Length: 232
Image (cartoon, rainbow, N blue to C red; front, side, top):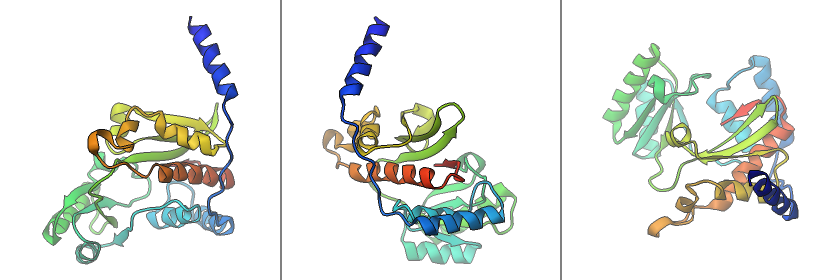
């Protein structure tokens, strides 16, 4: 029965249209310059400024982010962005920041920003750590989009529920490269949480076209920048 079911699924899949390979606005030359400069400074996880510049080359939108190297600058930048604020440590290689005390959420005023900076400094054992400040989005569903290179399957694009739900629920979808527009759209639809994106029980529907576009941009980044081994 399992073999018959798999055969039916495969036959259905073969009959589907393959779709096209979307080409979002890409500045390949700028991306290659950024990657070359980053490699010259040393391989590994890259600083926030580098990753943001690289994402912009592939039309991958990011929240407005300010970088601060001290309490006073953090308080000033938080006020400019508007509250509530999230503060994150930016040390390269600090991947799971929340588990190591590198993330402070729901900062509602300057005094909260002050305390959060001191907490991160204490957790990292640094006097003046650099932190990233972003305004918290009040609505929406958090998704994670990533690219990784698997030695057996090659490069894979992943989309799933974001935040703490990423590992807790494991609600993810994967596709190998190259990725078509139909692949990108199918990925978020395969999630168990997909109804949350389309307006579950009266909640606002999300911009699923943008989710698909992020997947396509991640595909383009991995295919044109072979030095980028992982992106989340």
